[in-house]
Length: 184
Image 1: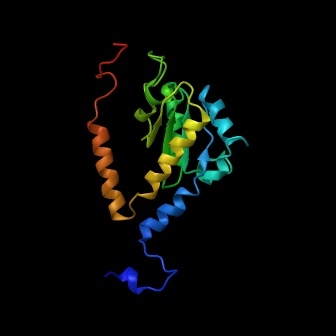
Image 2: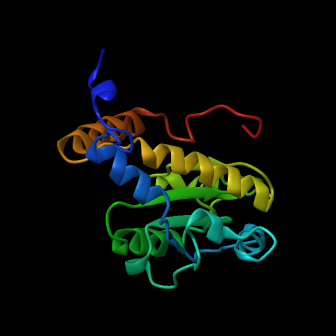
Image 3: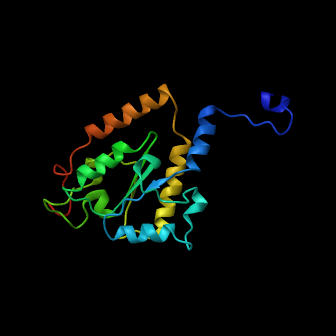
């Protein structure tokens, strides 16, 4: 016999964190940041066939000060890395990053000095989307997973603790030069 049974119908119980997460997930404003062929698929996601407005993403923002989601679509060169970081720093909090495509996630087939081997060396990434190039349907699935992640984020002091823990885990991770893969 809980409090739910004593309340009249039509009363909802929840926390401020639940309410804020619900509203945040429904109002993502992505920054336009297409670097290569993945950007074509990102543009298709914004078109009428896939209709990004169903996810609260009516317009891709040209200004980072109006955006809270950066979709890094394509390979990031060493010259472009400082620009990516500057745009990320100009975005207001809270902000999220989606790495779209294998080139943005790990450097892809470009294992050379000119391409950053993963955008996570430049900005913290929340969701990785594989594929070369990933289809708009895959981008929709990644955004739905990001919505779930946003809905369950903490607020206030809890958020600072959670952020510090994630940052510590990221700093302890081995660099891509230390990893042994198919190309090494």
